[in-house]
Image 1 (cartoon, protein in one colour):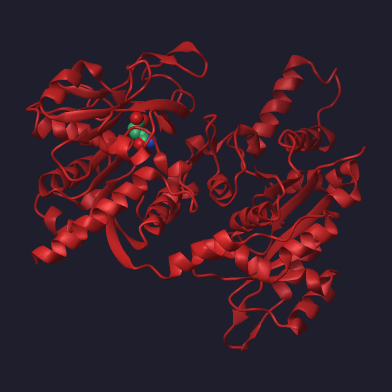
Image 2: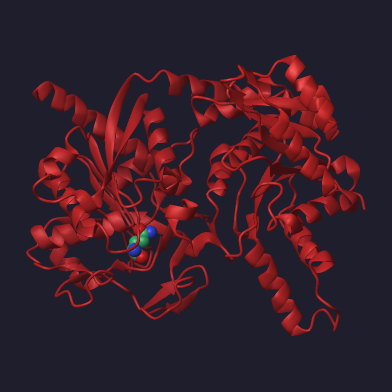
Length: 551
Ligand code: GLN
């Protein structure tokens, strides 16, 4: 079989959290900088069909793609580092693979055969990999988990077979491993890497490139030692040194000649890499002219992974303003009337992010009230927008006890509610849902169009007549209260093209107060920061400077 597309498989050894996702994204960025077209895919060994139902405390953020897939947070890195257009085929889990094999088996597709891991599961995995080829030059596939895990074995077997299927010259195996510096010995240790590669070779995969995660550049001698024990050429042993900012990773890899090696091994000819953009970005990140502090009032504050895209989007908003953004995570459960001022002291902007569940809801509403009354820039995202509407209804529009029916089914003013019937643009069908619907499948997910209102903060920020943003929620603004809230001064500044769904709200008489039903953080890029985050950080800077003058 002749194959034009090349494949890079990225596996991980020794331990998790070595930055395999970032490494894959950075490889993508480097190849793009040489003029190649690429895409990325993540294969996850867990049995959930997708991470949509997983607790963010355990799994980190659920990243949503334009086509409405709930995916692993590594896809966020891929989108932020590259121009790849990702969708549901860019993330497969063991659960999703088995689900389709079992569906086929029930349908009788296997014609009475015994259905087995090899070849049926491995064939399904290989088919999934091929589903993203499209017309790109290189497909980068990251295999989740660590070599040696039982559950990732079928994926490893599939990628082993893959090289034979598409030809030796078309496949490259990159193994990310750990080379720790042991203080007591005063040297770096290569044994964990040797063991991990031994494990990989025992299942038939000889890595071509080793990306060694470490806190210092590895000497020629150490690289030679690793190369000797792992059967890898010394110049294919690459130092993946710790960095100050994640956006430095492509530059550090390039310095180690990783992209030169990859194209040589895959036998591809490209132009020289253009890395000016990345260099300028890192330069800006390392030398900010000012700083602001944003209080993030949420529930998952102990695990920064849960707000990955949000943290990055805030950082991007800072880049556009030459400003470092410090994040102050405040547990909403601990905020009440008595301590709100003290907890928010030092915040130049307040942000309430998306979330699920009752815990800490009143604390979020308290923080929003504080931002509104004290005229501090406020950004509410999804649940944050919904609670901004609740706060306004309760304390400005005179709707005492107003709430979202998610948290109070008997509220006298259900300003946020479950829309049981709505027209879905994507399927062009009426969608129905109620509280008994499946947890996995009833959300409004993925990209939806929105029309910002002329003259609003949103309109000025976007500078566009129509925008598209990604959603992930069940509850919506209740149009029954629209008039009353507008009369009380709430500005509905973004609606769906048919006028049925309220997507953005603002307060006119406030320096910067905006809530959006969608998640703008998913579409922010370091080189193309999201307009709402740019505008929010700008207003936080103005607020900070004003405050300093007032003092
Ligand atoms: N829990 C809310 C809803 O389902 C908000 C969800 C979110 O913030 N992503 O509508």
